[in-house]
Length: 345
Ligand code: PEP
Ligand code: MN
Image (cartoon, rainbow, N blue to C red):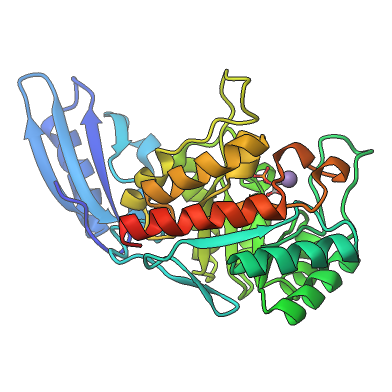
């Protein structure tokens, strides 16, 4: 049984040992009724059927009413449009004139949060001159404590727009709340959904209904399949400009803030046509890990990285321990260029 194109789904249907030939025929009829191709395997005790057909038609069949169907096993992933089967060539997402995907290694850098004008403009100028092509900086921060700095809101977006104008850097910012989609997407060139909101399905759908490109971070307990299914929520609403970002998952390891799942990069590239970036800052959670994890991301085939840079990490209101200095960022960019050249990127 082969995987079809255009959102096809493959199922394996295991019949109960006591199912009669009539019961089997009834299921086959329903499968043919929705235009599925079927294949019958009859053993001495069991009958197993394979079916390939339109995913939504197959999923809507009332399996629970077929008493003699013991189990229905989906063979293809629950995501359709973001899968490689739907679109074999890789997607290139354009962010304010900068391309993500298509072989480039795109570096996004800036402070975790916008704290004030001087901090943002100094960082933007530094990352631009070192070679970053997109600025990061958040206006709304998802903080564990409600008493921690929550972000400057609209004031931060205005400062980011000023930095974009002065340094020619498009910017990415997180949106936390469906009520802020218009505000953030109205200003940012790339709207980010953070790890904590990867499964906020109404927020995903809302971003799917607006035109700005979306970066979707992986939830820290999400499987790759769950992550791609979340991307499907955005895609199916009509927004196809989606960039994935691996940012580490929760494991038993305590030496790092999260465990960067570096293998997710080639796995996602094989399953999906969407570009996939890596966040070496929020995954490792430590300044010393940013450089090695960035080079690992480049080597493993990621489409770019998202790096926290701060002029004075010791005074940072958010995530100081993982922020690198502008000078360290410039050094890292040298290394990125050297490794990229070796890799032919
Ligand atoms: C961030 O990039 O600032 C952030 C909050 O990351 P994550 O959603 O991956 O935790
Ligand atoms: Mn952060």
